[in-house]
Structures are given as structure tokens and as C-alpha cells.
Image 1: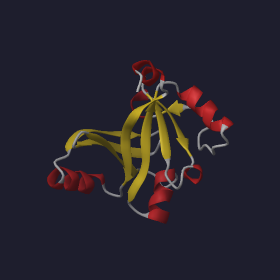
Image 2: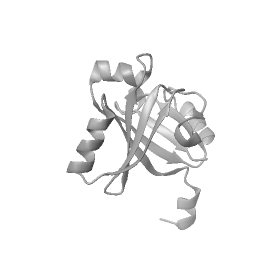
Image 3: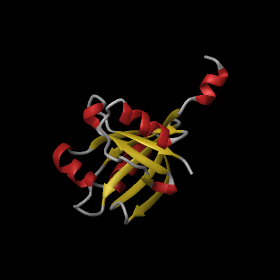
Image 4: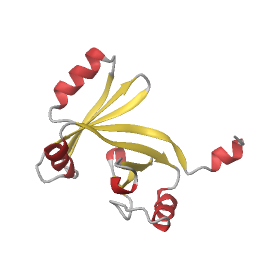
Length: 142
């Protein structure tokens, strides 16, 4: 691939894999003991109603999502689907351009406009009905 073409790409790679859990402590214990995961950080986002824990497993970033309130989408996800894979986050260079291109292509979006996520990054979610059942998070680092 031409180096300039790669530099011009709006998609930069996988930022993390999101996993919905009911008990962060139990999940951290499992991942660190069985899969040599490194616990990077845990934070509580009152705004999003989540306890977020970041791990690194074999060079892959994993985000554990535990709801701290029942009125947040991850709580609903856990009730209907149970624990497990929630989303894959793709790092993008320009989230506004990506959202515009997806809208033009007729893709259903959860977030029509970007919002602030963990660490102040700009994020927006793509509805899984448009992506073969996979929730995609677009993430533009600050």
C-alpha cells in the first residue's frame, strides 16, 4: 500500500474491545490470572453511568464496562444479552468526516454527533443493525 494513502486514511486501527461485565473485580482477576492481562486503569464515569476498567492483553486494549446505574444502555445490554462482547472501538482521524460518510451511505447511527467519552476522546456509536450485529464505536483521541 502506498504510504501516502495509508496516512490519508480516516481509520487508524482498533482502539479497544469493549466487554460488558457485572463484576469488574471478578473480571480483572480472571483476565490477569488466566491471560496475563495488565490492569492499566479503572475510572468511574458518573456522566455515562459506568465503571470503566482498561486492561492490556497481549498488546490488545480491552475496556470492561460495568454499569453503576440501571438506566444506562450497558445495564440494558446485560439484562437482555448477558455478559460478553459489547463493541469494538475503531480509532479515526476525523470523526465528523466518518459520520458524514456513514450517514451518506445510509448507515444507522446511535450517535448522530460526537460526544465526549473516556479520557475526553470524541466518540460516536454505529448501530449494530447496520454492521451485521456488531456495535462499532468510533473514537477520535484528543
